[in-house]
Image (cartoon, rainbow, N blue to C red; front, side, top):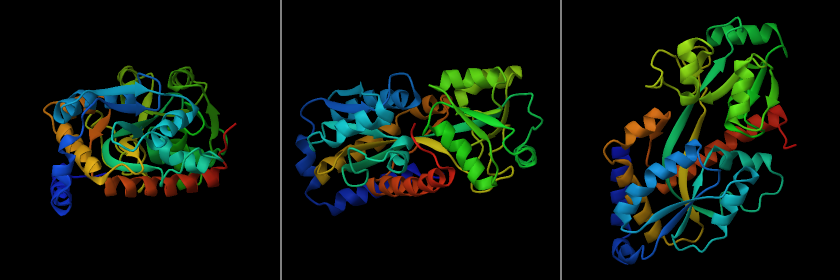
Length: 325
């Protein structure tokens, strides 16, 4: 995914210019601390991204930016809180891959994904890596596809839960290769990793930092990263797209959203300051070490991204027959 930070900065300037009195009207915002709701428990990639961004955004806004974890319900608890908060710019949420998956997975959402939120900016994307147990007789994506086709249902994969990025990555692989693997869901990334390390499962789509120590010791073998191009943390590992499956792409993402109805001048101020914060010296390096890439976008680009993700995962979920248990 090639997104130019300079292009976004230019776009932001044009938006501000077009809104005329907008910047003047937004001068009084914010006058009190801003909350950023992370719809997960502390410690995951989304939580880390939010906590890396918060102090820089606080400095640029001139007010405290407080990260608040409201996990549970597959992000529904946290995102529903954001949707029902006052549309004044003081409660923001972090939209993720699950945000785009839930419309096709959850029968009755407590909010409308496209109508109840005002997108602000796509902050970052997080690349994954598809890893296999060394006992699997394949060392490339092409070899793994051939193995899966030759032995239908013989391979299984672990995930951190139904609807998780790890499941979606494997299901997208199955969808695009017309192969089949048995899904074994676990209660989190830790147990799913243990299952792979012990050889109980054949493959697991995981975060890059989680796999690094095991790739170095040979306890796990990386097949390919899920970005279109190679990732700087694993420069010798090809992307799945370049090594046998053109068009394959999976990444977690973190996008800042506000409740629908938040004034445009506030959205514009937030977007400008987020992009400015993401350009802070050293921040990109911090993101890279956790497998993430700094983005920064316009609200319109975040909207288009979410719509595209909803369409993509809707097809995968329907084809695979994925349902919450």
